[in-house]
Amino acid sequence: MRVFERSIDQVTLSNGMCWGRSEGKGDGDPFDIFYFIDSALQTVDRFDYDEATGEIDLASRKTVIKVPSLADGGGGPDGMTIDHGGMLWVALGESGCVVQYDPKTGEEIMVCHSPLSRITLLSIPSCQLTQKSISRRHLQITCLCETRAPRHHRLVQQEKVGN
Image (cartoon, rainbow, N blue to C red; front, top):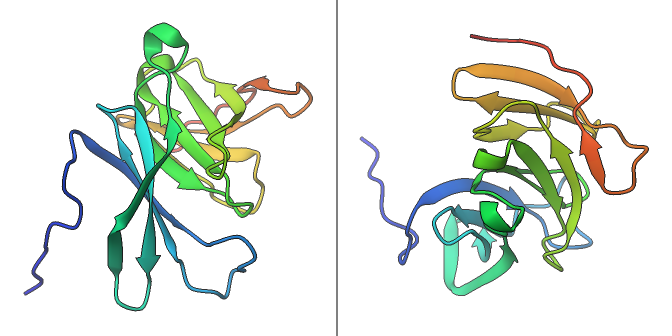
């Protein structure tokens, strides 16, 4: 039987999690960063992580992204994934968009708007960094972000892949 232990204290509304690698490390290197969303605080936090032991260094906790509230043009951060370039993609539930952030600077890089509301999670199914799979409760769609505009992009393709 597996035993689970609490890893992170001082959590309000636990949500998205993903693992990354420090700058200069490649696909063969172990993950050494853990990212975590607290939706109620509108934050993405970074922790040092030891893949060999599974330990999260709680003392290394640092807020790397502060997501604006819905009233300020953001939304509630929910699901999250990371691309091969180390950029974070965060689903903003109430606003119906997915935002790409640079976790080193906290800068918003790209916004992909969706006709859907309440986006909860996303994944990058291939090496095509512009292709995202997005889930809204029980409906899943595949979305391609238009890459010609410099910052705000609309989702230009949707395909139902599940129920």
